[in-house]
Image (cartoon, rainbow over all chains, first blue to last red):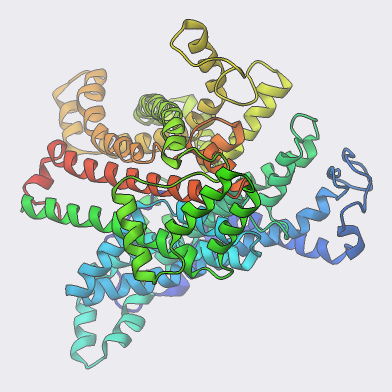
Length: 297
Length: 334
């Protein structure tokens, strides 16, 4: 996914963070995307409160029913309501994205800051490590781990995905740290006796927040993609329900050829909407973080 | 400066291969739950027969679980250096390398064709739409459409295509790469059969990457449009058509071509899940079947092969790139 580097931030050391927030809230792409995500999450979380646990069991509904009043999105071959499955699948898929993206961004920021700020041998070593993990598609390692573990839970899956999601943020943060550390305000901070760690966290990090935000979203999207991909291959958290797992069962039971369209189409549409919304938020963040893009809108 | 560049790239290539192989070795030994023990018990459940016993002996020797970790590691490395990936559990006595060799041509054929088709289409349409900009009514439809395609995961599109063109209007086959029982050869019948079977998987890959090539070429052309040399050409009174093809298009093509070369690195590992969905007999389908049958040696071998192929392709790309872009050769890049 293409992110355009923010080469120059013309602001003095203390960035008015409030300004960024208002900019974001005025950005249509950002607000629409975020609204869609929040509505999906809230509707499923609230909906889940009204579901009787007995209705979650397999066979709680008559099997293979097209959408009706009893099951508004129809039922599966195993007699589950697709709508009820969604109330778990949407939050679970987002949880995978959130945990994995947080882990990836934090590890990436630490490695990138260390590499960019300290330079020298640390940088040489870390840069090779970053390049290595950039060039190998993480899905390969994930396939291998997941096929060894089998039957992971949602959080475990998220942690594993996160462990392989730090390379892009690390590279981005590193190049930011490289350009920022030569700036006057960092020099001033150094001369005024601030320690390295203090400079990194109090002077460099605040400048990268919108940037880390964009990277976080990238990682979020990639993580949900990875989860659903692994699930379709049969390596997902099969005891839980995620959007990927819903697709896996729908495909396994041949729902396309038996024309149970409600079964496979529901996770398909939700995944598409979710990705589009996340991408809009990402575009919005990019535009706010990189003012030159705003003109093109 | 150039020598340093080559050395650096070489180091990264070597590190990629080495680090990945090391991760692949330690993963099954560090993950909780003794997965290699599980592989062994799976072996004994497969084989009561003579061949099964042979296989168990072979893997007892291969994993060397009674030896120290370091010894295991070095014997793993020397096996790899000899190109020995061991035997499949599911289809013993087939070697993992043979299974992979049967699958890889399908994957390379499908992916290299689709990569080129979508690149050519996306680049041309993106350039024209970017150049004509707001005057073009198409761009108001094409840009959101491309965005939608680009954000859609390729396997989601595959599912939709199967429903539309293999079920609702059954004009294309549902799965496989050729009619069941057909004998692969170079007859016209077989080739049309292969094209017929390949259309849907190909279409799902082309459509998704088309969105990306379109969007990237469009923004590259828009960036060129504002450049001084374009305004100079306009001021000179050159025809718009000539400015477009000979100036803007040519300059925007360099980064776009780099993108193409980079995506060739992912030809082997690019559409694992699409292959699984279409039961297309490439490396992705091989991995999918091995996952279903708990055939760990085949999964490990395929993953290793894809990693090495990506690393080799990246390295080749790094070596070719200075020939295209002289700024790297002279070292004025960083």
